[in-house]
Structures are given as structure tokens and as C-alpha cells.
Length: 159
Image 1 (cartoon, rainbow, N blue to C red):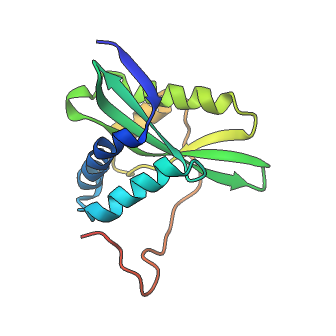
Image 2: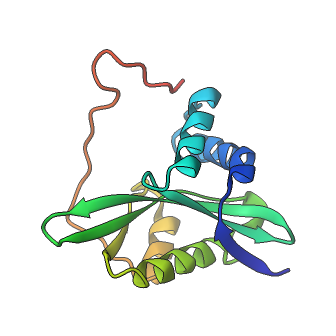
Image 3: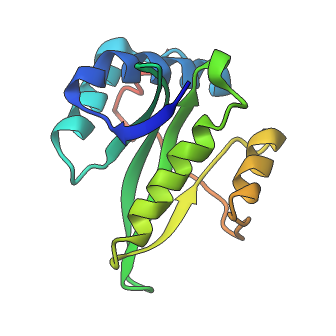
């Protein structure tokens, strides 16, 4: 059972939408609007300036995904790549899928001299995820996260 990692294509849209639906439910008990989610996935697949998805396949089936988006750091004159929308199918968990997705992304980032680091955020009560990230060399930061969402007068698109 060989695991391969590749960049996602428009043909992967259905599985990316399904996996993102699962992420939202598993991590936050949120039901996403399917039309909004599908449009958001298509937007990333169609416009590389928004980010990119990678997928992990085992025996021709997608078993995991990771999206990367970009943040420019004026302080450091370079790009941080944000690891987002990580999902590994339940029957493939603890089998190296995330590690393979992360390594492929880290290698790609290291090959680009404009990329200065990788970042991710996670649910603070997910100790297993935090330990996985630490085992890959990531460290805790002093940054917290706050948001205004949705902006006043806008629909959140989340049920």
C-alpha cells in the first residue's frame, strides 16, 4: 500500500469538499453550506494566488488533504505558508498520511527561497495534534488568535 502525495486538481473537488465538511464537523461541530464550500474549494483550485491543496493517495484513493495559504511578512521580507484544512480519512489515521503531506509541503517550501516558514493553527484542546506537530519540528508561538467573523451585515454561511 504505497502512499503518494500530489497537488490536487479540479477532479479532486468532490473529495476536498467532503473532507472539509468532515473537518468542520469533527473539530467544531459546524455544518458548512455545501454551495459556499464548493465555491471556496473551486476558487483555490482555479487561482494559485489563493493557495493550493495537496492530497495523499493510497491505492489510488485520496485518504488525506492539506491546503496551504500565504501570508506576507513585512518584518521578515518573506512568505509564511499556512497549513490549513488538514484532514485524514478515519481509516487512514495514524498511518503516516499527515506526516507525508507535511513533509512534501515542507520540502516544497524549503525549495522556494521566498518562503521563510510554515505556520498552522489548531484546536487548543487537541493534544494529539499538538504532539504530532511538535514531532515534526514545529514549536508553540506566543501569538494568540482573535477574529471578527462574519463582518457586520454579512452571513456566516455556517449553520
